[in-house]
Length: 451
Image 1 (cartoon, rainbow, N blue to C red):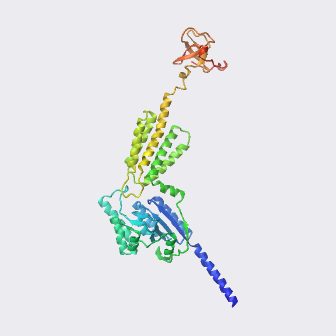
Image 2 (image 1 turned 45 degrees about the vertical axis):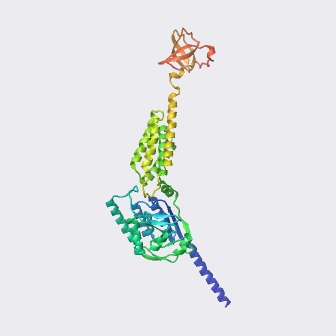
Image 3 (image 1 turned 180 degrees about the vertical axis):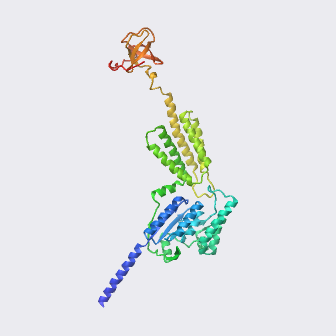
């Protein structure tokens, strides 16, 4: 009897150990998307699906907080989610988050969808590339396409969910988390990740046409953040950052052109301009603004080349700020953050300060006495090497020069001082000891050559 008890105990331990090992091996991959949907999000989601396959994850949870994005990109994300071999659960979180516009379609595309308390979903009416209202005919076409898409995604959730999804597209209707659950648009409300895993456990869902039961209770949450490249590119889709990078890039390139031979300024300038170009390429922009910024840069450069005491720099500053505000003009219902007037003004003033400093240096250089050429000999001391009666040769600044006496004959060996220059001929006079001390004359073996 005792042996049977011991054997049963051993078998129970083995079974419990295997179950515990299986439980600890379960993992859920956690992705997080904040902000507008951009091409980087598609790359991030693809990497998440591939990683989940490699790790044999139980599911992918995509935590979403977005005001929306471009239609074609949204449809691409929807297709990726629906074709994923690993279940993708959308979780609209944290509190206060939204799945707005394109985020509504992404949420409906999830194999399951949950929302945190105090979140919202909807307002999926299409708008133009700059957030403007579409022409009536085009708007109707796009709406019909999107309504067909949301119907196909929401039909498994019941007629009330389909009706609400269509209203989100047709009339930009938005609802709270509780309203969405009541209509069946999403599957539930979860307070936190642990609550979400508890509610997901045991649910059976179709994945690529095959039923799959989720085992998420006690599963390990494995965060998969964006890598450094994805994070940078995702953050670049901000007009404030794009404008600052554009200004830095232009200034760095101009520094490189004015002082060729180095590479640091040029390299920084090229990188900043490329990053700015990426952000501008994704953001809704008004190209008139870019033209105004180009005109401002031309005005800055002209003021450096032909200083006008800052007049062109002032005009360039005003043009740059106006161009920035026009380039990223705020538009209604745009999913991207607006350009801060403080950033536009600060960046314009910073560029004005940079070019103003260059202009000031250029004017200062123009006013500085020449440090090259025969004009620099005026005031220098030397020695008459031949009699000047009135013309002869003098030794000044390490060279022999033809010189003319300003007053009377000067004998060879007499100290002289240069008082003027006429072409390549010096005008000299006798140097009086009270005017200073005569510098030592160079060795005659190295007399130099003058004219």
